[in-house]
Image (cartoon, rainbow, N blue to C red; front, side, top):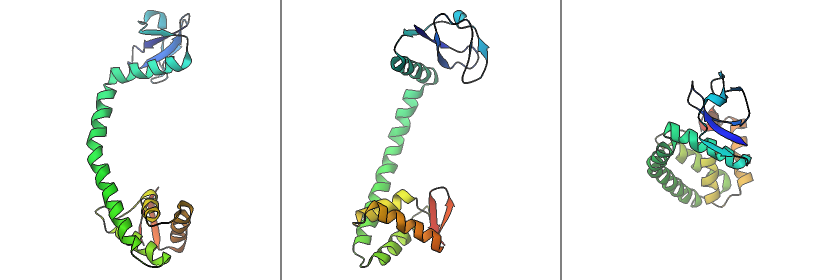
Length: 160
């Protein structure tokens, strides 16, 4: 049988065996006596125990409400990006020739507010224009190798 207890120092929920005399908090590293802590829940199933520890941590930190608020706030931005990418993809589809399609896609992605693009954005635009994923990956790799596109940081590119 395992218990869900809360660390007295950092207030993080952890799982301990019922007969355990001492434990070390995985968050703060402080040793404590779990027998002196309140047992919030009990379980023998490891999957259920992990879920209970996660629920307890979320409840202690107000995580569920914060997560839902973040998701609601991010939704309009996500829709805006998807609409912009579909518009770019439509314009790229009208261009003849694969090399010119790539040049147009990169140019349009770089003229947005950010001035840069991610690999997934380029892949989405080229897939919308009828390209296969592996071909889009090869094109981006080739553009970086040829120096036409520079990688600013991990997964962020712009025209050279």
